[in-house]
Length: 497
Image (tube, rainbow, N blue to C red):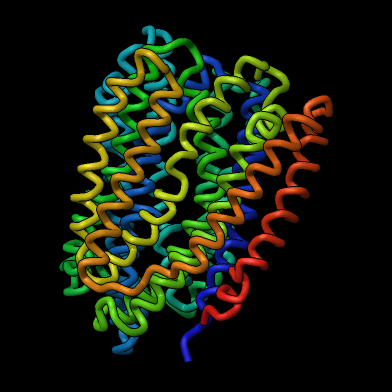
């Protein structure tokens, strides 16, 4: 009897939800202390490559390459040996990578922020050198999470990423007055938290990982992971190139433009991080186990359930953020160094990003389906097409629309990627789109968004942001729950195995 997908999603979402709440708290603390300023722009540029490698070698690429191989080894009774050998190889590779990244910071950071003045560029290079060990720590933590996920443990691995956020909150609030430069407090907190991500998972790994062997020569499983990892890296890199292009173009805009995109992206990624990541994390082991069936039987059922659950959860989040985005931003960020003008710019960028929220949620799931089918090159190809679309639209829209144009290009590119992957999956096998929950959730979310937007504009506008948000959220939940029940959405959710 297969484990219920809804249960795995809920366990992953619970842990991820705590992590994202701390991430939101981090952004609130950063907005209060640094606002949308040049020093925070420098920090974001310095963190770009370590964060890019986090997606490549951490939660994105490494897990997708490791889990199918590890699952097969577990079935053959060799799971402990494969896990131990993988740890040994990473313990050799990652320190070398971190050293090279710190050394190369003066080479790649000027390419990311060509519009920065020299003083700001020097600060970004210094921060980049300090933060590069982050990728080594977070990659080992991601491997630990993958092993625990394969064993059906989702809560703690999903919760662990909260620790860097918590450490950065403490750094911003407590260490900034004594740090020199003050923004380095964020870098110090990031490294402490990344170490904590690994440490908290080690006790649960005792029964899953054997004694660490010599890393060389690489085993057949390690070579197989390497072959799987290369196209997966390409797929993850395609998504990150969009951010790279946005960052470089935004460096030529007004001071704080990169920070504005970052604050908007954080709110945009909040539902993605809880919904899309949780569904993908829960579905990937199931895809890997059932890959032999192709898009039939259990594999198709897992894909159909993933699409339905993602849609039911993401569409009301999208409608709510569109209707209440401005008071939410004012409530969370508009204090300290963050101004009302920053709120208006951030909401405009958020609204543009939200055009692609559902698309990016589907891309998370579709790409994992292709990984499970042993076709990781397909997300690379569709991602490359989406990148070309994003770059073209960026260059077209950044002049007249600034940060709004950059964000809107990202949203449109997400739809190009999602539709391309969905079409290719449909060609391999049909019948996996659950029309009833998709259409029902879309109708319920539309009613919810209209009701909340009207109430906020005509009834709640005189209230302070906290009251507007609390009342609007309560109204939105009520409208969506009732509408979804009338349209039969909850009956489908309860039927998911």
